[in-house]
Length: 508
Image (cartoon, rainbow, N blue to C red; front, side, top):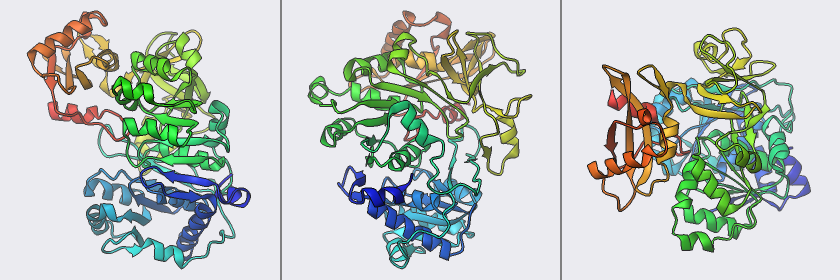
């Protein structure tokens, strides 16, 4: 299903509510405006397989641009608006985007990108940006009727880039699928978490990230209502759940930590009774954090593990998680394979590279066949990995240990930073933490912790000793960091992922 279907059956129903402004977009409006943009692109000569990009904050236009591409057979790339002009321009050029839509709030960045991307044929701006045509004028000059032929498009989103330049994750566009084909995500939303046309979905994360964009589109595919936050705020999130009787939501662990650290009076006053399903993903969640969220919200906290590459997915219900604390679940898409470096399959409980087996290669990295091949199993090309490590128990539940790139080997022993970070996450004096390995002439590597102290805590030797003592009851002595550094903030993406690569680069 797609907006055209719901525009006929429930034309006045809200497809989207922008939380900060209260702006409401009905299904009729979403259908008409996405049709107008699709028609404009088609008249400009864009055809199936061409690329378009958007550089936008969380605005209503994000989803109408997405749907315009989906009903035109185009690849659409959402770009992180926190990037530098050089980084954003690289993505526009690498994606072979012929059209770029920007927002006046990002005018300086948009102007620089236009200078560095001479291949852009069609530039549109929401508001006034030098060198860009007006978005609303373009839509007004197009027809709201759907294209005569509407092949289904796809997103092409760029990886975070733990090393080197980010790479576009290119999903296939068969050319034979109609725009109303449900794809992969929408059926999973129905099957795993009971999304339907009565769903009211709160999205607190940036829309340039895969999960918010795809889940919001999935909600609209099913005829539900998206409540989009422009920016996450812990207390405001609770207020919106009550205000709009939110039924479904999606979070990252950092959101949970921020909400748990709200004053008890704020938390106890929050009415979250409308919530049926609260989903989290995107980053490892400390066991204590999740346990506290279940205590607070009840057994409605679900989790999944997936990637922008969509090569596989695991999920776990709160009931299964309580019986298997720390797991990210069993496979719902693809077959889990945990493999050693030589490609052989690991024993139960033995950590290794996490692969998903599929019938065919589910993605490729755009313009990078070497990286695509590097994601494939050496003997089974349809088994793919995104660089995570973990193990499965006897019942098939997956437990992640860490990214392979960040595993620490000290004295020949593997140390997984995630375990140390999880142990420190809820210490009252810790606001954020990252653990990496640094060179050591004797042991190969030693453990270093970067800590952002909580408000009221004093960084320094006394806090360092306090944290080390705290860890001694929780993890083995050889895992306790020997080097500590306190920082005002740690590099995280807006979706909550630690950018450890930056820390390693700056420490080297």
